[in-house]
Length: 438
Image (cartoon, rainbow, N blue to C red; front, side, top):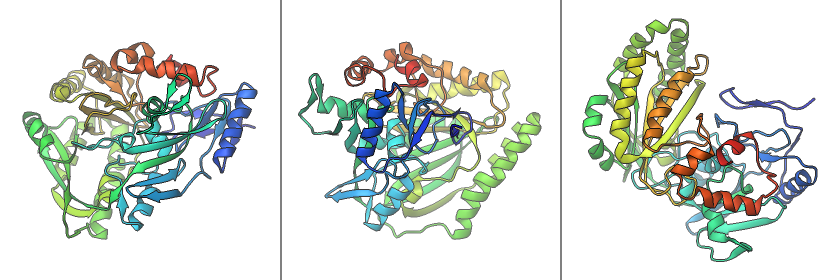
């Protein structure tokens, strides 16, 4: 009987024909060759934090559990195996007095899974994980192992330059090869001062540019059915460290943001009409706080309440209007939404399929409690985002296809052409890639 896999949210379930757990790049190459020889599609799974079918396969599934650990450390860089989780990497770097410059808040992800789907975090000047990659080790569709670097000037093979493959494969969706190791740019460990402050959405919309310009890392959450947002402003600090007490950490990160919030979501599931009042209660419970701690501890969060998510990247200059229209839509349609809408920003990226490619970007993420899906909510917000040329997060729910994506990604045709050269038999494809890449 086939082993059955499901993602973190529980909305993707699949049973591959075969599962392997390679412990070396040679094992991966052998698996890819075996898959190609027997006509089976090959995919490497991460930890299942994508809401889309990006990692699914009915063929040969590779689990990266044995491809873990730091391989090598140099001056300003570190190479780690692809199956290493961000949480493990953060802890290992911290022990060495090093840190990544930026990251998202979910650290259960594997390194390869995070960069391949475009995990981004928030930053005024520092981009997502793919923008901190210096080199990638890849197994191509014929089993060849290559390493591509951002400063590479050579050729991988006829018609494929190293630099092109590097820029395409950093956010490659696993469509160009299986990532087996990642080299990141790192820096000496540093402190971040985190300021959490409730603000009205009206006030934020009136001063967006100033708030973004005044903070290195801005993240804010708007509670639908209220005018209240929780802003998180993270900026570098000389110290001293002033971490929250163990009790305050438990209160904020475990009890209020997970245990209590999960209970409110469940009440809202049973009594939808009460959701606006529940959100008003949540808004009144928000309070200001400030503390200083190691950067990776500030960047990351605990996420125990299961949800479904859609997120779009739009040009940053349209953020205010997009939020205004989203608010009007929720009020007009009278949807009952418990989860806040999250907003983040990033600078432009040069990774071809990065959602921030070529433009300063703002991200609007909509969440729904897993037990109360609301497709119309996602569809309505998606219509707004696409009018602004929005690009959906590759690992989050959306309905866009290759025809649309070709219009919003300037290097989309180049990516397709590169894929044709490297994987003409589509060893690495699946149904999701058939839709989004054609």
